[in-house]
Image (cartoon, rainbow, N blue to C red):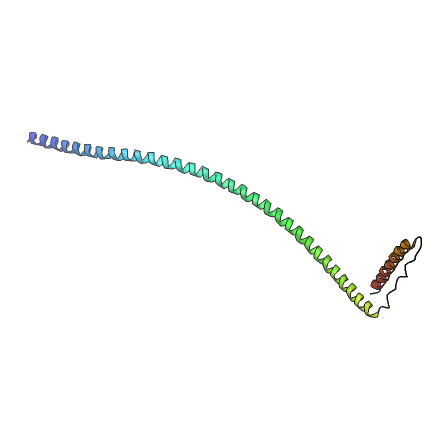
Length: 156
């Protein structure tokens, strides 16, 4: 019996050794697969780091572009505000000029209706300085009419 027990114990140890060897082979394959996965994971991590660095550079470039756009937009808005103020001033001045022109036209119409006969220039003087005297008389007449018009405008 003791031989039987020894054989039985040896057989049991042999079976357990075979099971251990099979388990070791399976574990060795899994470790090799994990090492391959580790290499792929390291490669993926490296790619992610490169992509992250590239994205950070792109973000910095975008921030710089946004800053430049903001400065440009601010400058243009200030220029547009200045132009709008100038245009408003010019519109007001134009409205004033238009009102004055309207008043002048109204005064001219009323003056034309009530105006006496226009002053007629004298007949041209003949002689040595006749032409010069005619030009001087015409200039004097024009200045007189302008002065009369100014007086009428001030009265209005």
